[in-house]
Length: 261
Image (cartoon, rainbow, N blue to C red):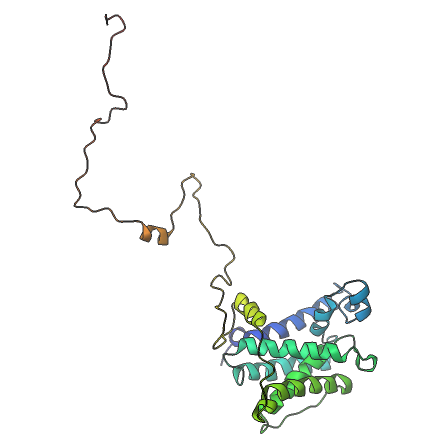
């Protein structure tokens, strides 16, 4: 049986990042480090005060520490992880794009005043739940604790994604929701997960805090192993040229000070 630390390390990167970020956001609110209304979705503040971070931060607040909060966090750990390990296995970029598309769809729906909610993280979780239910249609699901408005918005966003990526192409239509190149670049720069047939190479320096030449305290430059391998090797069979100076720093004729020229 694995320990909690081993279980945490085994989680796929995207679901782990989203779940941990939501947990830290609520923890910071519990410690009174910020006001939740500073990260809530407000189009008035976005347009008039250029507080564009609200378009992103509102998705990371799942509410106060409570039973509904625990249920939503468990949904991420269950259904999000199951999607990453199943239909989105070796498709990390596609899974990130699914979440981005779902968040964008929810932001568009929130323009309608009747559908607006200050925090749409719960709707994004319900979108994950909907996509999982379509991918694992034969597995029974428990929707206990689903809030009405966030649940409906999440199901609409999830159905829109599933229709454009699965149902419409299966019906002979064109695949309209290909993962954009800029998403591939972001995930490649992040350097986590795996994406088959990715048009962008993974960042080889991801996770490296410092990289470069080092210097010893006595002022001598430390050589790199690769540079040492690239330097040409001296042929041991080549005879060494004798030192004609014989270790003398200066050579030439010498004169005594009292001698005649």
